[in-house]
Image 1 (tube, rainbow, N blue to C red):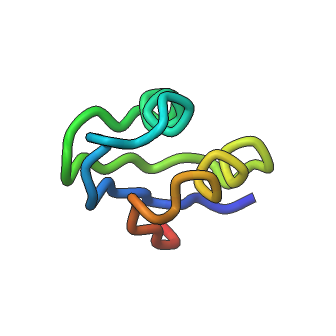
Image 2: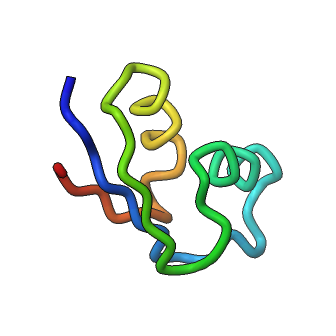
Length: 59
C-alpha cells in the first residue's frame, strides 16, 4: 500500500452533513489543509465520497 496526499481545495459550506463529517474524519478542517495518509480501502472510500472538494496526489 502506498501513501496518498490529500488537500482540501473547496469549502464544506452548504454541503451535506455526511460530507462534512467525512472531511473531519480525513483530518481536514480548513481550506488548503493537507494530509498524507496510507492508501487503504477505507481511506480511498472516504476520498471518493468527497473527491469534488479535494486534490489527491500520490505521495
